[in-house]
Length: 211
Image (cartoon, rainbow, N blue to C red; front, side, top):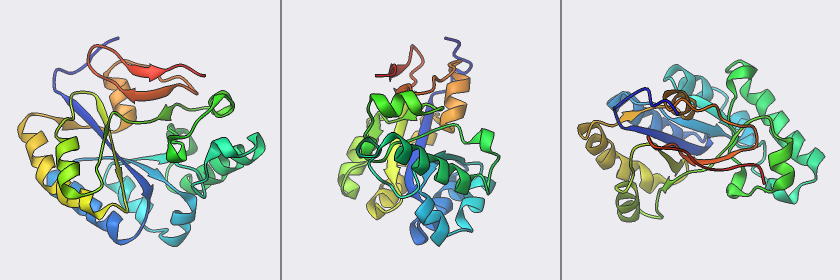
């Protein structure tokens, strides 16, 4: 492992985008603080808000695959799961080249041996998650540490309020916000297709190999 920075790193991720007003609020946070996120898009939502992925890309965000209809992929046949991911990748590729769609986040964090063996990208989970309200999110997000992958959702409006307070604290503490792919690169780690990743701290990687 080759840690290429002494600055502590956080990879903020947002699920279920684009979603209209909430996406706009997250974009406003990014502009205000000069930070980026990794956004896991749902194809059904792209069809409803086709302009918003461009705004995310222009902000410097990374776009990841969260399936087309947000189905539990472990309840799908292999062909159905492949179609969910391919159809969504096709939708995302209208905004970024296909080779830049490097990450998959399975809906509901549901994965099994079939899914891990069929995908051509790593499965990205998280090590620090939002709460159900602002106070709980502030408490949980306050536990974030170097190399954590942070989970938030577009629809959770209380998270926006929590982040408005927490982001300046992270920045004051010297944290740098990076995309998940940037985190892999800065930690000197080549992600494995079908590997399940939770965090990339400076001293190692928290993951599972294919199951």
